Length: 311
Image (cartoon, rainbow, N blue to C red; front, side):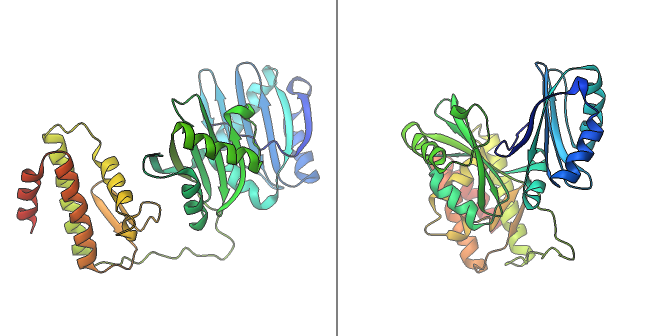
């Protein structure tokens, strides 16, 4: 994904055919300290982010190939010597440049959240309270309209909207319009987290599990077998998606299961839990959700047999 923060252009309309790109970069590293260099041609587009010392990251996207990181920068230098690219330079605050540089390496943490179960404004508030560094990808209606909302440490730092021709724009008016359109035409949201650069001397704080390992293992085994039961009975609903929707539905009663709080996570047959709920409360909540899923999909007797065996 090639995303360019265009709010602060320093130089635009240069032509790579007449430039020494490496010397151009060195000049602006000294001149502005941190920023982005954007390349555009009819066949390809690329953006790379830099600070005063080095290229931090970026992305290249062509008709037949694409790439991220420093290798993409090396390839871009070669291509720019034989092709003709329009080159623009943008200034970025030094504390924000790492965010932009790592957009291509983001990891999706929520997928296919719909307005049927939550609204965009609530989702934004949740991600802000969790100090998300990343972005929310919004698809409206049949996908003809949409937008990207960028957050750094929970703070909205920009947005890209289909009616803005893909340009980064921090306008609150556009954000409000995006929220309104999801309310009128429905929407689907995906949330991506971008790795945060640790500060010098900072150490990651390990998460402490709120449950004994055997309880989490028991629940993980139950959900894994329940997932397998969906496959055996040819239930035409994605198990993990239905489970997530059920947790959202029960979030008021069991807030520790709310996917937006990210205290309970089930993936690849394993569970991590960082909440404060006791093991009886956690077991009861998950089993209740599973029972309701079984009833809604017409497989309650089979699930009860499974539950009895695990008890």
